[in-house]
Length: 195
Length: 170
Image (tube, chains in turn brown, purple):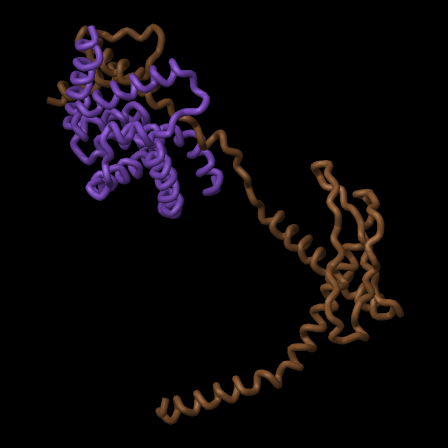
């Protein structure tokens, strides 16, 4: 029984061995089985050639070191941004005339020139904090490598707006009073089960 | 070897065999891709339990085979399109030459007929042998049957293939 099993196993191993030159099946029956195997193999290769996605795709390995370095760089960049903004705020407040926004033309990557629009003027809620905006001047081509002062000015404007919004928020207590009163009334109603 | 290194090696060495086996069994590239990804996900999840012994390809193909069997059980939930509808929505290759497409389509049709002519177990045994180059003992382990039964399935499958692909084409 075991001999027959071994014989069948050897025969099938011969019949299904990978295709190679000079491989001759030992007998007719094995050769017959091998014909079927080779026909299947050719069909599989033609009909569904399997790509090797695992090798073709580049494997990006994220090391622990690079993650830490990225965090440090991000922290430094954020600190620098905050520092620059604060400095410009201080300088801007110290200047008698406030900050000037310079109108200019920025060169873009596609070779076209994009005109930087001046920020619209806002109604002077607090005149002492309003910024003097320079009138639009003639278009001028800016060297892309040159330091862009208008960006700093915009940062300063954003900082000013944040400060003003914070102040305005505290000034808005008055209009919210009826809402707060209403909510307190609702809370009381809930507690009294009268709602 | 670290788990990361081992998995990178497995992907390079056995990714093609795993995907080939799945493709032959499910005959849909998108499903085969999803299942191949699932095979490696499951192997990764079980990495703590894996022992560096035996054949890694057999291990991965065992997972692949189980996924194919699971898919077969869920097959009733899928909507099968008839040939006419499939031809309308089948994505066409962009850069292959027309003759290549035709040859591939003919081969695919012939392959479908050949594989449909086999019983599910015969198909599993032959595809595990073809893509995995596994020993018959390993195949018997995956298919969960005695060695002589696996051999018998292989023999009958080869005879059926020969009749359909060789004798009938003469």
